[in-house]
Amino acid sequence: MTRIALDPLVADLDAESAALRAAGPLAEVELPGGVHCYAVTHHAEARQLLTDSRVVKDINVWNAWQRGEIPMDWPLIGLVNPGRSMLTVDGADHRRLRTLVAQALTVKRVERLRSGIEALTNASLDRLAALPEGQPVDLKAEFAYPLPMNVISELMGVDPAETHKVGSLLGTKLVANEHVAYVKLTKDPMFAHQLSPRAFMLTTFALTGFANFSSIGIQIGGIGGIAPDRRHDLAKLGSRALFGGFLVTLINAAIAGILI
Image (tube, rainbow, N blue to C red; front, side, top):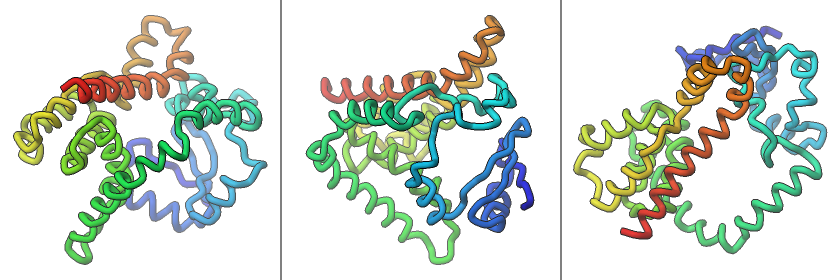
């Protein structure tokens, strides 16, 4: 089996994706830092693995981790070791934490959201269907990434007709930073003067905050320089800080939506 070295900067996504598909359902890959693992590239095999009780999420069963081959300053440490949560534990711990979440996400509450989410999904699919026949489409960029942001926008109180624009700005803020998102909001012809006063106000609240993927690196590099011996703690907490910071800005916008 040929090992595929993944480019952390993803300079050529199409070529990398083609190589992974050609390698079959189970591709041996090399992550930054020379870390070796496997990528499951086919849906059927991925589903089979995810439903197999022998597959666990606990990082402590990873042989490379047990052998001490993964340093705490590894660039991807925040993704593989984000701390214990419902998403990273198994067995009794997972059931206990999942029970707490389930109390908020009851069937009745989720059903109230169904029609709105279905409408947003259909609107996204209609936009894709309206594209010229034969035109290549990046389903991640045009569908998978915007849809959850659109749902979040509607939960914030944005009018359904404007959720796709606000959701796009939220995605820009998360992937790039709030400065880029604000420039798009005020200067880009697609957004500038195209949103209602209410949507513009809610978006302004939601974009206020330094929570984006690059902020993890800045946190590790900046604060880690002050306390080098705690850099591994910063790396471990990076994804939590990102999620918490992003969630706070959304809550701010939702509260503003109630008051205005």
